[in-house]
Image 1 (spheres, rainbow, N blue to C red):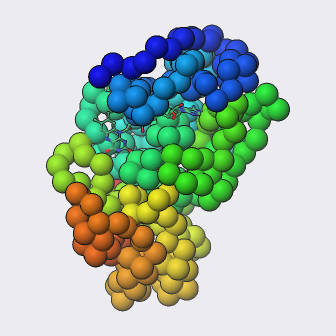
Image 2 (spheres, rainbow, N blue to C red; image 1 turned 45 degrees about the vertical axis):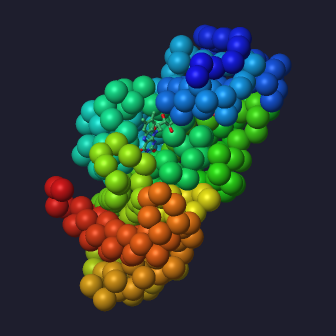
Image 3 (tube, protein in one colour; image 1 turned 60 degrees about the horizontal axis):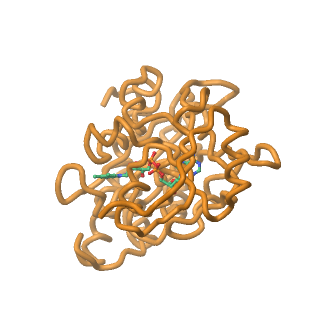
Length: 292
Ligand code: FAD
């Protein structure tokens, strides 16, 4: 099918884009990489009367460390994460995620901001952002505000963004000594959405235990899920194998999968259990300086 009729806008500044969102209200949608929105429009599951393309706005695609954060501009493409030297060196969990999203053609267009703003429970970045305890920076007619990632995903395809706000940046606490993360995903075939995915991030305390643990789950619930009890078990219990297995068990219990063409719910829980242990092992190895 082809999309219904719509007016196309290509604002040159963020303020113009926000002005268009304000003027056209519920009839407007932002267009970033178009890799989720255009397919929805082609099936007429989304029929915005006004499409606001934010691809020509300067300054939304930078990646860099500043003020205690890694700041990722909303229009950074998946392919940018794969080629950025700082990310390769200090945030390999982001490369783990981007490299298993779709295929290189999609990744050349799909944006990190779009992946998070779209809030598809099957998307890979939301769980990674949960594990990393990221913040979302939103800008609208009332100015700029920061939203903690735990408050961002409300329902499938529904976020805390107001209709007239643009996600402009994701902020990830700067990687310090002893921090490491990993994202693992099981898929039916290369390029598919996850049967289940697990993001793990740790900050070691120098004595074999943890100052911080973050665990996020992909596609096993209506929103990305933080496996809080698994995080606590690890923080309290240390990094021995028995505690890792206990964390895997608790993460499987936190998952709320449904049975569908990607497998029965029990199978997906078992996938979460196994991937959690493996992702934590890899995160710990990276935190200890192994180049994986
Ligand atoms: P768009 O499609 O342009 O927009 C998506 C939604 O987000 C729209 O509602 C739009 O209005 C809103 N939006 C976009 N940017 C902003 C912003 N800055 N502020 C506010 N709202 C905004 N994703 C995965 O995670 N894993 C996969 O395995 C995967 N496989 C895919 C396979 C195929 C074949 C395709 C086509 C896509 C796949 N995707 C996958 C989705 C892809 O990564 C999407 O591109 C991504 O989810 C959305 O990013 P986008 O820039 O394309 O956003």
